[in-house]
Length: 334
View 1 (spheres, rainbow, N blue to C red):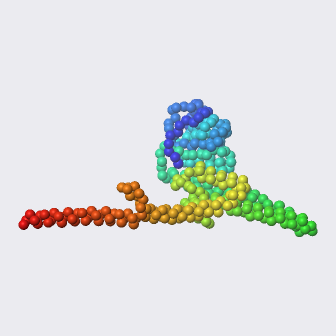
View 2: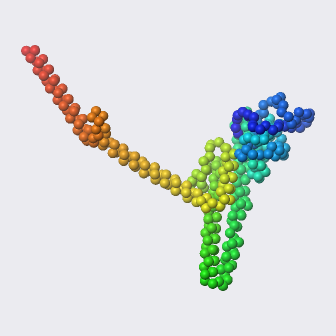
View 3: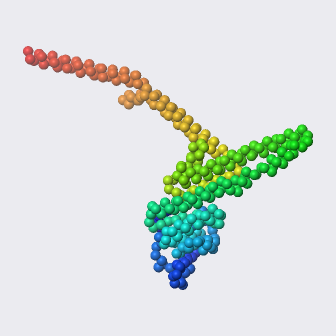
């Protein structure tokens, strides 16, 4: 649940208001009236395509079981419409209903709930309600029509070729049919891997929603990167993306976890080799240092020898000077 201001959207169309039950009719309904107090809760219907029908948005709002105190509809822009509520329970019920309609495909808008103040218990209640809805819809996708359609995709073809192979065929025709059946079996295995990848991806989302982390249940690979907060629009995009990838039938989708595993292993191997290489460079630099006073490069041993020689000469001169001074003082005393 977000908190913030509600600036006007582009392409303003109209506003509307619903009179509360038992209240006197409002003759100003359908036109903007500045006397409305600031709303406690706002549901924004956001459009990613920026192309929507204003009348369709109004029709959608009118079908909402919990009607808002008032609403705004726009013809263009990111925000297609706003619904204003005074009661928390009404706003939450409307939000859940809009998300349910989104899963059913009744509209392509993303609802988002904002409030003037953040109440921790309200945020927990919102996340619990939407978690129940999202988990139920994801489980429906795992066992839904799209999966069943892919599971039965090649059944008729495999059955047809198998029947033809049982007949009397010429050698060339027999080998041709056998190759066709083997190809269908290979494609069937690829479909099974894509379905397995699809189910594991959706299970990762369920694990995140239920607080179990977002790693692969089998290989402990993190397929999705989620924030700590519940970003329901982003989670919904992940779900739709998984459905589109399965429906597209791309072969690479079946090997996603294997590719990620190779990337992780190669990254770890590269880091290890890089550390070894860096350590080797440092060891080399220990033996080759720059002597700034002479602008030359010498080994560590040469540097130590030169350092000792210089300090040895200085020490000898100092000792001789001290001895001369001592003798002079001794002579004066006599």
